[in-house]
Figure 1 (cartoon, rainbow, N blue to C red):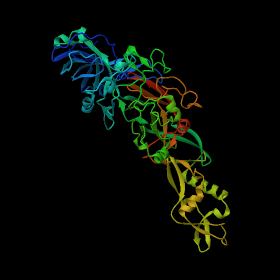
Figure 2 (figure 1 turned 180 degrees about the vertical axis):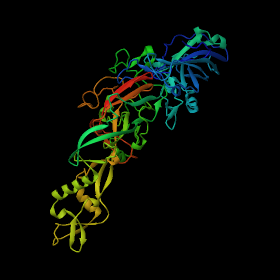
Figure 3 (figure 1 turned 90 degrees about the horizontal axis):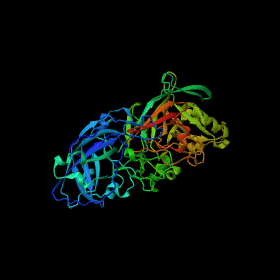
Figure 4 (figure 1 turned 30 degrees about the vertical axis):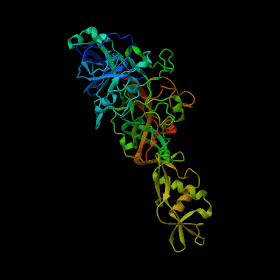
Length: 575
């Protein structure tokens, strides 16, 4: 199965496989020369995750995802201190491309690695691998101990040119091998693996096999078989008091709430014991040299900031833990894939704030009529209106309820006044798809509406203040589907089975660690099965989208997620 060459071989290009660490034994032989040769096989496993486990469970990467441009090997002594760095151009054999598979290993590669400049007479005891590493990563990792390498955080993920992703960074896989001292990512090497010549190292008995995985998680969105794209009807809604059938257009999608950095080597907690399944789900897979959960750099960090809304973000002016995207930034085509760093957290963090702390798919959509013409809507007081009818409803409400001396008028001639109308009002963006109404610049009056009445001149700002009232929530507050713009927020499910985010009392009764999150080398395949609800309104398409917990319950889509090898997770969604 593996290549018979005097080099380090990485077997299998399935992103979810982690590097196994062997138990440490005694190291008696003494290194006597100035060079040592080691034959290494590298295997990388297919990506996988759980939302719903698939059959088969893995998925081969594409040619771009499997491309290897450089390979770097880092060696450590038995005490975990740094020993040496070596690099090698490897020969690779692919087991398959871009297809489902039972095989955990995607690609196999190998070569003879030469270690030079060792500063000890004792052979190294451990080895880690990084593929497609930047020069900075290599420089930083050269001299780091196992403990320091385990804590090393990078921005590197892949190279993105427009919508094409290449040069995926990969590293030794991590899983619970029972030895915390190895960082759970190091492969154990024995003295007999090191030879004085390249020919000796090529012997099959001397080969060291290591496993690598991509740092990226992969997400794909597609249309489900049950979604009728010939009749994109959402349903019948009362608009301006009249039953109206509304339709949808899907314009694309994107990933939101994505991590800014990741550990070079996947981090797990020693307390996540494989034996007791302390996490409550099967997260360790030693036989496949991989695991299905991890810590991202801000995991369980009480200082990490997940905003509740754009208004909250503007008030606090703090650095967010995750990156958020705008409506205009949702430009991935349905059927295509996107990539992100892993993002995981504890249930205690997610109970405080869920929607903006998890990575989600945002489905970009528009409200249209049967002919495909855009329909701009306003959700005011839990009822739908066209924009002008919304303004009229606001004024009707105001004149019906305002005190006589607080009603607002315009002057038409000497001692002639008439009530303001919809042309005097424009919308003002608040944030998060919400607007309120304000009066255009001009002079306004309060009075009783009679020619003989007493009128008081007021400014446009004063008139606006009267219209919106003194409460914290403006009386004219509404969500505005400007140009029909809307999105659906779909939190990405991971491997654990349990309650859904749309369930009643989800955060207090059902939320468990591992239900939601994205993990490196997993392939999250999401299919849209139905759309029967309006999405969340978008007013400013350049504003970043920060979902709220209420939004994901009220504006959800029916979807299904699979995660594959890449370890595959499938998720179906009904919206």
